[in-house]
Amino acid sequence: MLSFFRVLHFAFQDIVRNISLSFMTVIILVLMLLSINTLVVVRAVTEHVVSQVKEQIDVSVYFAHDIKQEQMEEIKKYISAFPEVVKTTFLDKEAVLAEFKETHKDNNNILNSLNELEENPLGATLIIQTREPRDYEKIITALSIPEYKDIIESKTFADTQKAIERISLITAQIEKAVLILSALFAIISFFVIFNTIRVAIYTQRMEIGIKKLVGATDWFVRGPYIIESIIFSGISMVIAGAIVYAVLQFLDPYLGIILYSEGFLTKYFQNNILLIVGIEFGVVLLLTIITSGLAMRKYLRI
Image (cartoon, rainbow, N blue to C red; front, top):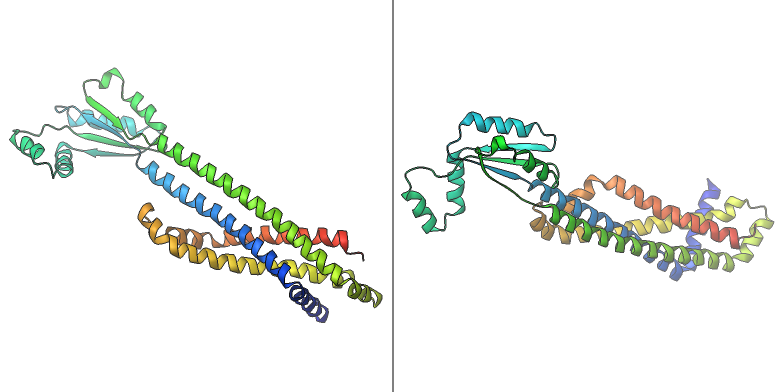
């Protein structure tokens, strides 16, 4: 236990002696972590937006005015059997009329013309929601058979496939740029840490020699540099975490309006905090320890 505290003491001593390099190492690691968190944010927002867009997918089937209830129920049952269909909503003629009036409540000409009619001119509607944007084609085809020609007056769909493809394309480009940025910071971190350990070994070469002469173990000599790597990782995680939290608090009110989800990013990070922190700390720790190990292998002759 005593030797561990001495190793820890030497590690902090090395950090203070090379404070400028230590500071640079932490800054580069923080930038790398921030770029990784940017990737997480982009992925989270994209998944949420795509999910919202998919919820808007529907096929509206407008029935002829004089169709019987049994015929409409038959079509609803037929369509509901498709695995691509997740939900069907039936609106009778009165509900369709009420919705039509609500939509055009500010247009007196349309409402006056409607009131002059003796009966409801609108037919019932069946709204069909599918799993994926591409599924609407199959539904439209299934409803276009001759048996339904006189029953179904028209069919319309909300084609969100292009919107989703556009979102996915933009996301892929952003993720590619962020990945390149993360890789760049990782490479810079490698050389900065490598140089930090190299300088520490060079400035302490006489002390290292004395330690070996008095019987110091390999762990006692290498330990401080490994501890330094862990300290760099821990400090960079804390700083990056504080910055990410501040940014989330700033962005959430604005994203909440756009995404219709209050505190979306904060909730996302809270729900996935263990996974995100675990992966990021593992990546940083692995990078720093491997780099330190390579530097010690090249410059530390013990």
